[in-house]
Image 1 (cartoon, one colour):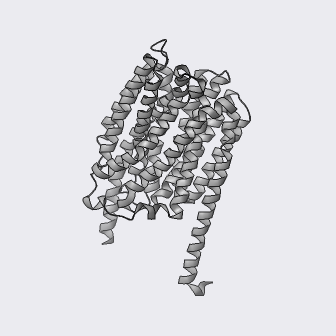
Image 2 (cartoon, helix red, strand yellow):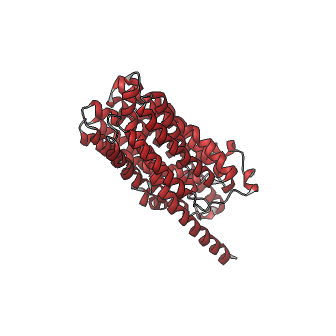
Image 3 (cartoon, one colour):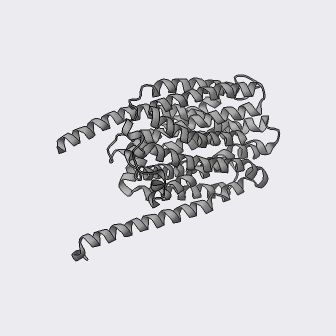
Length: 414
């Protein structure tokens, strides 16, 4: 019986590894979507918006799309399977590029915001790649599967900003118009990749099984995981969103901005090659804590100077911190639900994360325009302290419960 179980786990992991390769490739191509939006959104917004304080609204609309797309992604995945959700997402990514290019050519701020909103919906689907990678995997392989899919973002860090660099001046004087058209073509390629993923539709029993959502999300472990995700991702987004425009306000070039975003994205996903192994060795809570501390360190660098090197260092350290904290928080979420509960729990977690991002993102433009780059960085510190405190409290409570259980089972050992 043990041999049969082991054989089944090996077969399942072999299928998961094949899916991980496709998901990592899709992650790389999908990352071009977010890279193009974040590298160009505030600059195009400043050109098209009626007022400078609205410059980051297109990026905020992307984040709103992220939040709005999480629950529908979970619902589609639960009803029709992950592959159907992935194909829908890449279709929206194609529309993002086409509409974004059209909006720039016709000088429409409203249409450009709609395009970035659609890009956010595409991004919401892509966020589920990391959880999909763990479907059917053994417990030991799950953190590595999540980590390897996220590693696909390394190539997005190279592809996205370089795509912008190579194409931004093709249709002068319409800066970035051709960049969005190429992004649409990249999304079509991603559609072909996700169409080949081997993920069967959910069994009928899985559509109605599992515990109530409220029971799951009130677990201290889930609360800590969701809170750390809610802190890690929105803070990263706040600083990253503001950085290109802040660099322009400091007299730095678009090439300087593209370079910073490129290496920020590489730093976001590069550590994924070993983050899973670190989680397996040290535990997710310690990796999350390290990530939050690195995000605070990035803010400290941002406060120390306004040269290109300061901006680049801020973005690189910020990316590494996000990688540790967000992948660690995702691994914690995987520990809180059963297989039949995964779609609704994962979608709810992402809804919390990106809903908070949407709220914070709308304030980033006002914060930068009215109070400057220093204020953007100062905002980072209080949430990081809160996240570390809650994470420490939940980890301490869990260790205490385990110790009490051990004492109760082996009273003579103490």
